[in-house]
Length: 584
Image 1 (cartoon, rainbow, N blue to C red):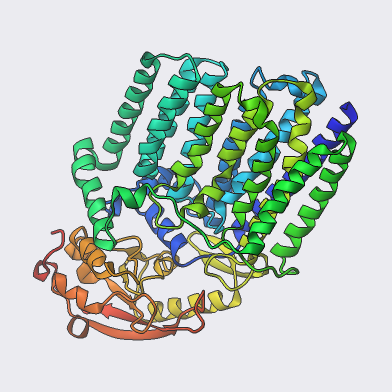
Image 2 (spheres, rainbow, N blue to C red; image 1 turned 90 degrees about the vertical axis):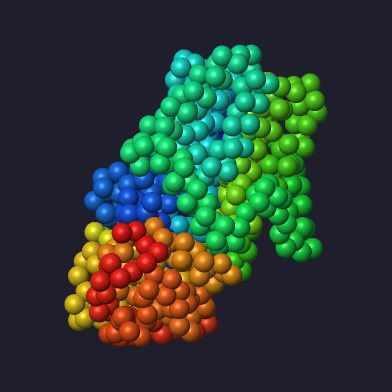
């Protein structure tokens, strides 16, 4: 048994280090001009916007300054910090008194716990399914949930001081609210259930945790707006007005269960992952470890093949859902033992609900985000599978789960790098060095040429760094960040929706008249997501009278089959006092 544990430990360590190392290296490649442009506009200038429902820009702004505006390092540390938090979560699990004994208390057992923690922390890579590594509201939300679960599990398993554990919950809960209030709403209910129903804690402890979260939220709100009243009664309602202008919202739309396209072939594959996991568990321990070593080598080869473009596989967006196959397999194996350990089962179910809380309120299909947050489901499963501390069912229970799930997770991550979000070239094949922010990124030749063209048009026309600019293409906010313009109206004026023009007008209300009078325009009239130029009339501006065309460029292909002509407009400089419906 000791020899098998040693093989499992070293294979796990090597696999995890290679996978995480290669994943971190992608921080220096590629750039998405839509979502990622929005994140960077928000993080780099959070104080420019007076209305918002998510405050991730303020939270990450100090880290943006610390990275000195170098996007690659901002991405690198965002991914690394997420992995570290996940490692801390699984280390807390494996170090709990009821579970640590399954590895043994000797040196090899401790190394096994380290290796297992690192291995299962790599599943947080699934949360970056679209491979947008720049800090954003989803990553802040995910990091906050990890912090909260670490604190809750420390209380549940009687590890460390209650004050420290409660402080983790306080900080995590506050950050969750700043990232995504809808998630914070459900998270509060789950945490109350976990602490009251799954442990012997009292209301007194919950009250000080809730009080601490409230006090910290007030402090952050004051730091953001100078006054928590302004934050609560102006910023948040203004942000909700944005949401209503775009598409509206309702409780039914938030608390929903989505469906995904699921063919017969995909059903067969999912069932095979369950059957394979159960079948592996039936094999002798030595065979299980050997198969795990083989699948680890296969997983690394698969990752390299996909990320370098040698393998071409259909990019099924919900491939991460398959990770739940081996989870179901292990759950079936331990189900009989769970019926007499209802407290552990309840805690595991609550932990798995963190994945749903993470998705709550998203405009995307919930299964995309739930599969990305599968680390919480795996955490709950490992707790119930190992918490009885029986060595005969101990660490070897991890082997079939690891063998199957690592292939599936690597497939999902590899596809993300092979088909980066709204980019036509695999990340590692983008090799032209381009200045983005205050650092360099490797981009595709097409993206590099596009940026040279639009930067040339702006420079020849007298554009200066920091000049205000409005992106009315509906999907190119990242251009404003790259050319170092001041994005006004909103970090991303979303186009292509029924309420896009109303969303734009709502943003004009929060924008300074002085900025609007001097703002350059980027317009894509025949594009897929244009904002109507007629909406400028809401503040008293006219495209024909108040602007002149200074140049045109062709857009990138991105996910479209053709390019679109983008037109750059220079303002004549209308007097700010002549504008209406804007901030004086």
